[in-house]
Length: 221
Image (cartoon, rainbow, N blue to C red; front, side, top):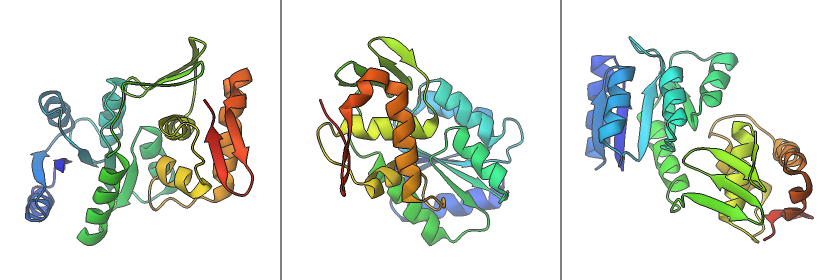
């Protein structure tokens, strides 16, 4: 994988670069938020971003928001010393895919990076469609019958997963793994609740989103 590490602590930046390089990853290192954004402009092949929250210029939350506003879908794993729930929520709401609190074991960090790589391994089509439901993954836009639809980050992730597997039954566990970061305490009932939110927002087109009793959910074409 091609990784971009954004870390202003010189020692930690060197250590992470060495460890991931030893694991046969291609690694670039940025020491500020603006440098990270500039590198993303010239390195479109980055597979994952390891993003420190406490940066000297733009914080990690703002960097992530700007990347998502540009339409970047690169997986982002935030690294931070802040372990309060509101900080973790802020990171996820900014568009991060996962969140780790310092200090951490490299083995766990490496495993989470590999998980992000597996999650992003499916070839990403520019626009996904089922019926009159359309999702533009790069621009993070959803429309129904060409009318824009406002979805939260979790709702968007669930609908994207279902659109990528039309007519297939996906278990609640599969949907949870796709839409929620590793390490976040969430129950399977949360998947049911968010599916209900998505179905309601889809209006009449919500009939495509079917419950398969005892198995999970399916987006019928």
